[in-house]
Image 1: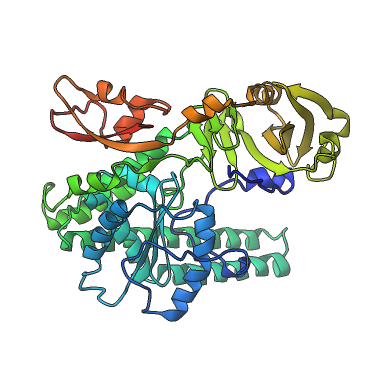
Image 2: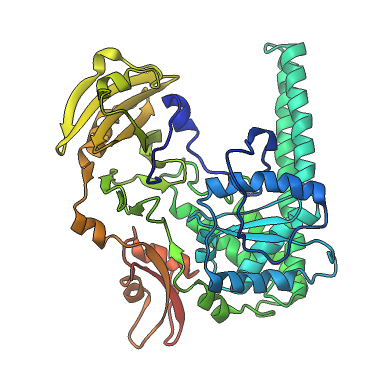
Length: 494
């Protein structure tokens, strides 16, 4: 959550739109306002985009939206030089001598990478934190370069336009009751999905060939795919829940991609061929910010704390908090969700009047009641809309009004308990508490005599399930061991 207010539309819509952008996604330039954003004046670049001015112009229109969604750029000269060296080695590929690229490291903890037509490439620092050597980063970058060189973005936009037209024909001409027309529409959507999967597999093949020719370990692609799949699995609230991270969401299933990536790598030899450049990469990410920024607030397990706003709250065990640029959301068992944001409300306007002012869809006026939460003026209300039930709690703290919105299916009996627990946990922080909250960073440390996986994980602070996270960040499978002198990543606030 930003230090400033966040606007919220109607409640039912807001909860549905709390997801992040997907990887390798095309964006609609027409939906952007040129006056609303300004492109960055200081991007991380390998070269300027000059090959195709028309495509570059389209990408520039999307650039501000991506920065706004992913927290802006992450500036770290040491890290930027490290990534620039990797990208620079890939631009020497003889199959693509003319394409130039602009690389931006996004200040987001999400695991993501994507490309836009014209050579705009994006990597999140969350993805870099998960990587363990230069070869793995090269595999991701080469995959995204392949989308650019194969014109996948343009092909996907054309295919999507065709499917939109087909859908309109089915709706307008055949009508919603025509079974044959509906089947045709469904088949069209499946063809579009298959087309996207084929693009991803093609980009994998091109990317692995590129990193192999550049001298990198070609097995880095399958290795990093395994790391991403393991990380996504760790973020799953329950087996039937959607992934909280979206890099793999629109791609072929991980086992299929990993198997095919391994087959492509064998063209260069058995495992062990190629350079990993692990030490130089670890030097580049040492000290890199991990997780959220002070301006967005921090997730500490099941707690959210904001040192600038001076507030905190907690969600129940089993919920996973996602602190995005748009809002703080938490997903829990039973399709429950919590959203937290802030809004500016005139001091002379009562919270009761504000909650009844029309922004809550399906509000039950009889449910509105005034209360206090840890000394703060508050109002609570209930609402229902489109198969969902909502608990709405407004809390006034100083000049700011905070909104806790909890949603559950109409069939759920847990809304009251969960919403009450979250609301009761809201409190303001003392100056001493705010001073003690520091951002987390990746620290590269050396394994000493007597150290093992458990003892190194014990040095992690401010994280949920430190042993599991330590294994994920270092690409360690079950039963893996460490050797004296190994360099590993831990997360610390020091």
